Amino acid sequence: MAVETKLFEIAEDPLHGEAMTVNFGPQHPATHGVLRIVLTLDGETILAAEPVVGYLHRGKEKTAESLGWHKFFPHTDRLDYTQSIGNNVAYALAVERLMGLEVPPRGRAIRVILAELSRIGAHLIFVGTTAIDLGAVSVFFLAFKERERIYDLFDRLIGHRMNPEAIRFGGVIADLEGEAIPMLREIVRDFPARFDEYEALLTRNPIWVGRTKGVGTISAEQAVALSLTGPNLRGSGVRFDLRRDLPYLGYENYDFEVPVGTNGDAYDRYLVRVEEMRQSLRIVEQALERMPGGEVFVEDRRFVLPPKVRSLTSMEELIHQFKVVTDLRVPPGEVYAAVEAPKGELGFYLVSKGDRAAHRCFIRSPSFVNLQALAPMAVGRRLSDIVAITSSLDFVMGEVDR
Image 1: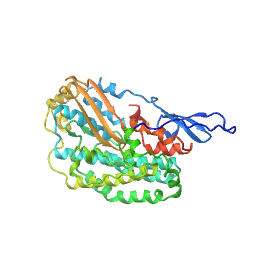
Image 2 (image 1 turned 135 degrees about the vertical axis):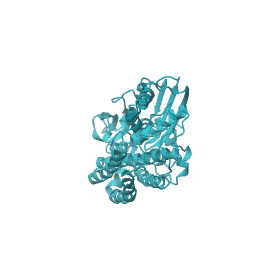
Image 3 (image 1 turned 30 degrees about the vertical axis):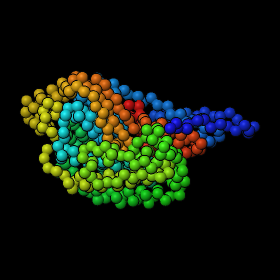
Image 4 (image 1 turned 45 degrees about the horizontal axis):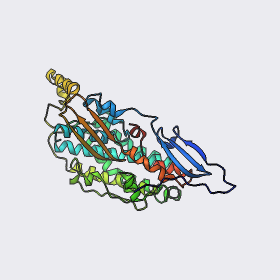
């Protein structure tokens, strides 16, 4: 199906002058990064909207082809930096398929917990920044307060807050133990009331409803034609979620719902993300209660780093760690692995020729693909609506200009 993005025609009326072209961004707080949108206006009506990307381009895919397999992990953190751990998981799953590694059950469960907490953190950024874009300043501070609690847990468990690089080939960097467990239980206990608080401030707020309901509408057919994924697709009524439809990390064993919208507007996309936070918390609780015993790393020293304590106390283990990091050679082959990231399908296509780095790397970044929907959502709306539309798409320019 072709997606209609044609330029609105200006009526032949002596009161109408020529169409006006203005730049929205790239230095504008509501573009959520260095995005430039070239708007063609008839008064305040948007006739055309052209996203212009590339101002932040960093060449991550070519970087993957020059760095070693392990050394690329920190670069995955910096794609969608609002949910770094989900990026780590997607990259690790792709490389592990080439290696033939199967992560132990405890390692998979911890990956699920960390990925779902990252999803909640990313959606909290969406709720907070979209609210402040539309004038609801209090929600921004409330959402970021709870996100800090997730960062505090990451700091306790991993040793880093933002960009924690928590995943390693074959497992996770640290076991879930000690003070991290009661911190996690407190998050599971407290967060549902916080989500209710955000909804009490926004969901029936007449200003919020007026700024989002019926704004940026896109049908299910258009969403599919544009290859949208994640909440932007589900907000249009398409119930597709990789965790349920193409499960990984044992997601098929968790009980959770996939929320969908009905109207495909900014309001529905907001409702979907709020409910997804509740469902993510539900998954975290199940993973915590069912946490299996055993190791968090697979025992395959051809590809897997030795435990940190061993590399600090044994010269042989330190030498082995150096070899794995600097001279790791992944078996030849090609693979595509994808995860359900907060913004949609995040996939890594990798080709290995048995060398120290990927021969080819392509990253399917959902922010980049979802940005296609901006033009059909914006045409015919008012200039003030462009802020609500860009916020509702919830893209990160670090992932667009990968």
